[in-house]
Image (tube, rainbow, N blue to C red):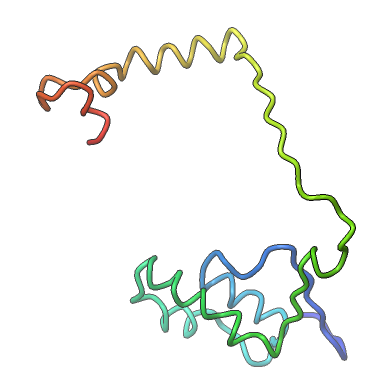
Length: 125
């Protein structure tokens, strides 16, 4: 643990992944209160991934007193909008060989399998 008068956590990723990651961030900020992850994790272990996401969606409101969140548009209004450029690059010979091998090995899934009986539906299994 670090010994300091003040602690500041800077992260480029908002709290979005899982509840244990939230605990790790809180542990860094408040090591005296968040000593072990076990009680924290046990509180949320019964949740499904969907419930975990729903709870995480509420986390920013609960953590607002602890966080300062700034958006790029609020900080620098003169930045141009993000531009995305897609550059298609052909596969190398080894990549193409692996790709064709996978397609050949699993062609029945793309064409429809004998077990399924419906053409083109095999990939949905």
